[in-house]
Image 1 (cartoon, rainbow, N blue to C red):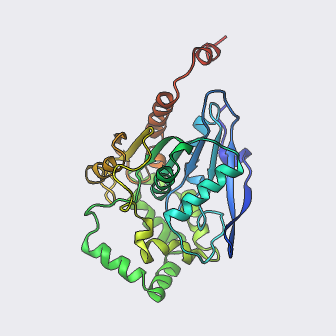
Image 2 (image 1 turned 60 degrees about the vertical axis):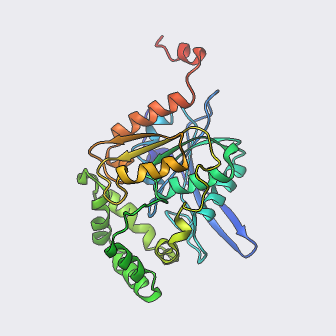
Image 3 (image 1 turned 90 degrees about the vertical axis):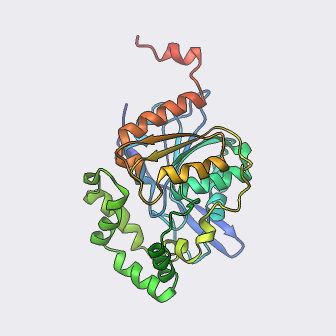
Length: 307
């Protein structure tokens, strides 16, 4: 049975006290049931994203896997407090969620900033990760930042200018224009997607999380991790060939220094949001990866045969 996420899945929240002075309400969802011999999967969205950005992927796998997804603090429907956002903070959220759900191990499928957060977590707690599926990850940029980009991020880092730009950006027209370059198949940037990305940026406190990567870019980078990092388990890089912001031919070699065991797969006619942009090809690749991480047993193969 293939289900539609928004029809039957409800939101859950937990109150996360991530420091003696700070707490935030975090949204998460769960799908499917536990399956013997199959590790649960945790989906993590990218910058500006939310659980719903996986709505063309999670339903394809929920029949055969227990699946969790959550909104990172500061994004989606999670609370957006005035704190210092970083990959370290997101990794701490992953740790807290695994503790909350009593999960000894997970497969993380992470996109962009969510993938970078997964790598950071896996480096520090490798025993908790069965496999990493890294979808156009951010965190290592090489020389892809041109002069105009550096100038722009310098302006955004100015509190007054940054907040003015965010206020100008927080509307459907501007959000749609910003999403277009992240898609090769631009028909996917429809009203539904634009509204999904617009609503969270209008929430109270959104300026704190949305401006953090430009105000403190080093907090969102992986440069300081050892190369190779301490996670040595299965890892896979899945990239959109047309990602102009993070071009695969430049960025994949950097990630393979961090994770030399990582296989790399480039999907044509897809850009940065590959999992949504080219969801059918992405889902095929993810299914292939999951079968190799945990090959089906003879018993599972027999029970899957038609009667």
